[in-house]
Amino acid sequence: EIAFYNDSFVDINAKVVPIQERAHQFGDGIYEVIRVYNGRPFYMDEHLHRLQKSAEAIELQLPYTLNQIENLCLEGLERSTLKEAEIYIQISRGIYTRQHHFPEPSCAVFTMTIKNARVIPENKRVNGMKVLTTEDDRWKNCYIKSLNLLPNVMAKQKAKVNGCDEAVFHDDGIVKEGSSTNVFTVKNGILHTYPALNGILHGITRSIVLKLASETGIEVVEEPFNLDFLYEADEVFITSTSMEVMPVSQVDEIEFSTVRPVTDKLIEQFQALKD
Ligand code: PDD
Image 1 (cartoon, rainbow, N blue to C red):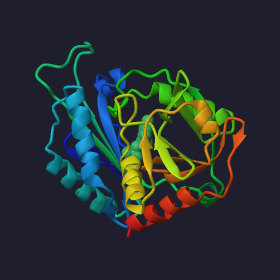
Image 2: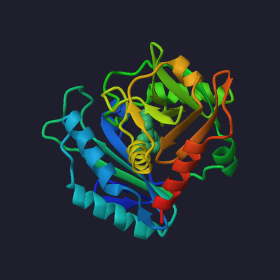
Image 3: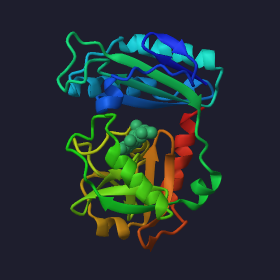
Image 4: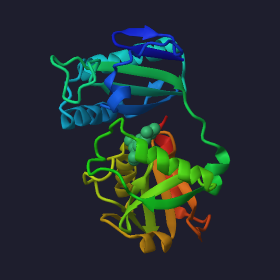
């Protein structure tokens, strides 16, 4: 496992972040999580382009070109010698005198860690995860992959203490996304998910799943749906870089069948993309 901070590779446990780093004083920055399968980063271009989109949205000048970032990832991966890994990239607005406005001149800082991938328990993939729903109290720009994750942290903890694996945000009853995942339902063979508006993260796994579905002739509807629609779904699953396509067995008090033809088909197709 290895890390990178402000122009150099460092030990994963090195104490390198200065006190006045805006990432930890303000959460002023953006990030990406990229999965590595068998030594190869998965959908790296898509992650890097989303990073650029997040940077533009918060008026942050990236300290490196996307090409340089890609090369740093590849170099880090080689140094780490890991094959099944998770690359975490973070860009903060840099080190300054704790004033809210942007540092002048700009001085963004690139951070990276490359660690062993979190293992997804096989029983979860088979039996599915339990989720609870919770009011979405986040800001309106969740399409930005910002470091400000306090509502997500609170929601995930609420899930954990209630014996669940994930919390699903709803906004006045409209189902948005999970605390670190996108949410899909299947009803009468049709796949439903919240549209790629500013209120959710436009997940890379989400777009992979939508593409796989259309290629397979599964009808897709990207329109808002409410909690009742979620409870009455035939199948529910969540997606993310680390969870991939993950079946859901229970939402609040409602249990779902383990017969889930559409979810299983998408899981199978997703697995095939890794080779
Ligand atoms: N989470 N929605 C939110 C709020 C997320 O934080 C994530 C990703 C997703 C799924 O996006 P993707 O398919 O691009 O990973 C949806 C990452 C993995 C994390 O914070 O660890």
